[in-house]
Image (tube, rainbow, N blue to C red):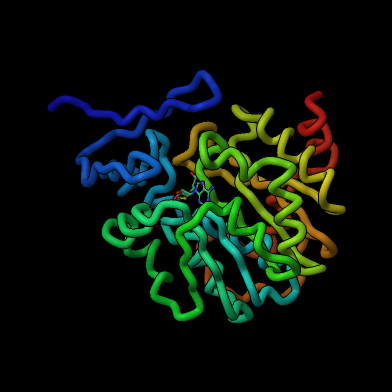
Length: 277
Ligand code: SAM
């Protein structure tokens, strides 16, 4: 039998990342992007948007635990959370594990991603049924502009910063995020591989520093993403972010208070990375 691969073309780096394919489960095109679901040995089902892998059944928990629990535990009482993107539902599932959360609004521009996730990724999309979840299909860049002092935590779980997702990494957007956060709010966004996309990491960090008093970077190893060593940029209006501010009580596979602390890079390494030395 012939080996079949899905080859991801990185929009930024001269890089190809391969997933062996045992079956194509879904292929479609929404108003915004091409959507595909494959079955892959080692990864299980993989969601692919415009030719870029978004999450896989086997390792999605690492990405979703780290993008959610670090900002939510940095905040002492996250009652009101906004997720921009995240149409697969993985971040929503993790956010709603916090009993403090009274309302989680998920704003994904593409309704069809949510429908595909509900059909093919039941363990990831499970939280869409939670009564605290509110789903809005709109551009997150526009949505956030309508709010002032509204959210405790804003999570940007979007596709790579190209096309309609690019605006979510601009200084202008971060000013709207700052305004939409309460006086002690926390922001986080995924900022790609620190190995292959250091320019994106530096650009986002530079813009965040113009807007927020506290800016930092943490990382996690994610087997399904090109470069494996993935980064998250975090910014806070008031609370320090390198330690959980409450006792860690949610059920996770990997995240813990120790993992929270170790996810942050040592200060000297961080400074060198963002200065480009
Ligand atoms: N974990 C993923 C990754 O980085 O590979 C991200 C997963 S999630 C499926 C990304 C979602 O962001 C997509 O469903 C896409 O529709 C949404 N998205 C991209 N740009 C957006 C925007 N401007 N407003 C709202 N949602 C957006």
